[in-house]
Image (cartoon, rainbow, N blue to C red; front, side, top):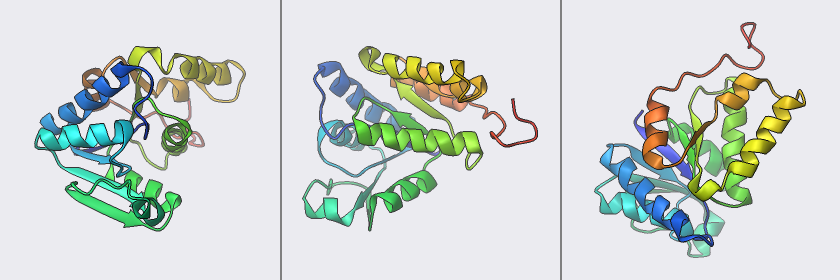
Length: 191
């Protein structure tokens, strides 16, 4: 694993523990010698993750659509800022640049980004780990909802179990290192 994509809020959130973990996340990624890939913003948890990685001597690649750059929310101090034409291009570029996907607390954009990568993983488009840092129980309800999908026959249990949940970034990174993807959903060897 050489790079990790972090999805998280463009706001700081209501609980100071969210910001604390964002800073810890960026620091740990840099200290592990990994490149941080993220949405390129200077605001909220996004900006905090990037600033912490940079402060720890890490490499940070941001990917942002031109219209958001025009709104002056792009982080101008990154190792590499890639400007793309659309949100779709942004997500594709982030996926191509990353070896794993980690989610800190965030809103609908954060959910949409990680759910797309999880979907791609269960379809076998990639075999990269997807996980959540469950700061202060932020993802407890979502985790129950995902289990509810399996309990009602909309997803096989191995695809629920492929998601990594951790209380902190250090635990998530350790679990990512030992990650083994299940066979793709439409494989003849499916679970």
